Picture 1 (spheres, one colour):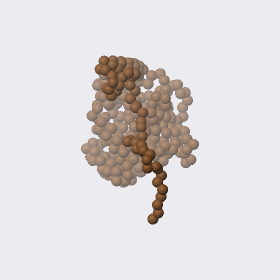
Picture 2 (cartoon, helix red, strand yellow):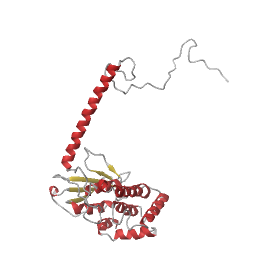
Picture 3 (spheres, rainbow, N blue to C red):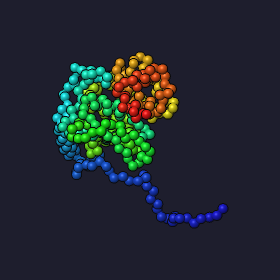
Picture 4 (cartoon, one colour):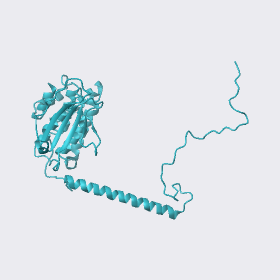
Length: 302
């Protein structure tokens, strides 16, 4: 239709790059040592590898000293105690974690629209083995009315071993647990909070009875991924799985209540599924409601 003058001279060479962009070599080699093996004799390469090995061994020794310090602080046994069995209903269970002389702070941020009911059941279990107190606060991000008198009043922080602080706060991906902001990442999700508190109650359960604990973790993953976070079809499938499991035993893992039962009970209440449950799940759900451990959690439901 029309002609356009060229944007470049015919006799000017145009440099076309062979790659999109250049990136600086991220591998830090010592001076005089080639990582590709070119231009350096074998003796220099071996010397460089020996130096790196020494640095790695020094770092491993530092890590070993840190682990020894943690082991001494928390008095972790060299071998697990196999003289007792662990469950949440039948006592005696494994020894609880030695918290030392300090106070352990458990700070939980939870959305009032997604109440982690299991937290209040775990609080009751913690009270059986530790001196525990709890308090409730409301973050400025929450504008709706929230229950605050969920724990008995108390005074004297130093007299307790664990302080549980529940903060009603708008959090996007489920409740969050923080133990030490300086040394620990946020524990995300209700079932992961249950796992952490379960280890406080019995830190040797995984090594003493790994099969039972693996089955328990399998149920916890099912509750989180398909019941709490799932859609309607995934929730129906999860209830069918729970119904099949409860057809063989009275509780979800073995013949006594476990953290799997606490998580599933909380998930069903959280998703408001209690009105339409399969037969075995309905019978199990009623047994949970009649259990004394769930008394405080039921007050939050009202």
